[in-house]
Length: 76
Length: 270
Image 1 (cartoon, rainbow over the protein chains, first blue to last red):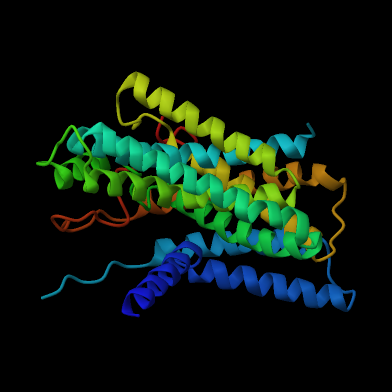
Image 2: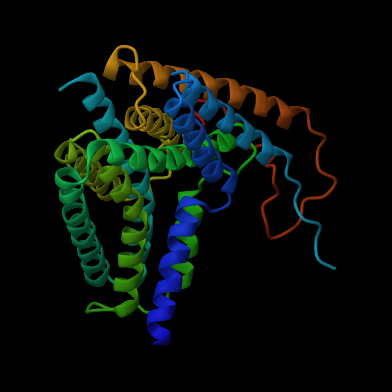
């Protein structure tokens, strides 16, 4: 039983690292952009340039954010 | 073949080249330290499993899943993958992240595995080679499945991946080195641009966006993300150059950001 559980945990961790990893803002950002676009299209208000522009902004913001991170202070 | 099919094949070929270089480094280390028989067996078994995955998942995807739903989900996956690749490549090209060092990875793997070379079967050599090829290959499988299924070109995508594996293996074995000269970050940058462009295109198609020029719009997206990448690399590189030098570099670990690793781009590694 514990073997199955370990396998499931490892499987879940693999996909989490693969799709989220250390860039949760990318995964969440993509989902938010698509949800907003889908909702706007549903009411006929979405522009076709929305997805490319939003994705470009997401990339710039994520890269910029990564360069602002400070390394953790050394443990004492 | 249409221009979008060529772009698709190029994206898969580039992605598979990068992952194959990383996998070959591990296989070479396993072969040199634990014996070639087990390393080759582990590699072959992993490749067979990966090919079976493409067939088992890809064929039903193409034939049974509605195209709009497939393109939305697959496009979202491509977007996440593409943005992750592109973000990492931008950070490496601008000097905010250390470059991938195949020589260092090879040396470390050899050190971890040394002391048990055998001419027969070796469980550790098999496992390390299998794991290396399988894990690196999973990303390629996902890219082949997503790009191939959404464009209804699974065969082209699989053939491009196969060609990259053959090319990298042939070059790696011929020159007998750890392929550290391959411009990995440059390839990764262009693959990231193409995956992101295809991701935007397919999700748009899936949720009902009508792109001007149809498939040709992919080229416009590629151009837009290429331009954005160049601007980002230039802007972030300036931040590294303007940053004051660190007071002290901690020993035994790489500092981040990585001063002194700024290289010209797109020839960041080659």
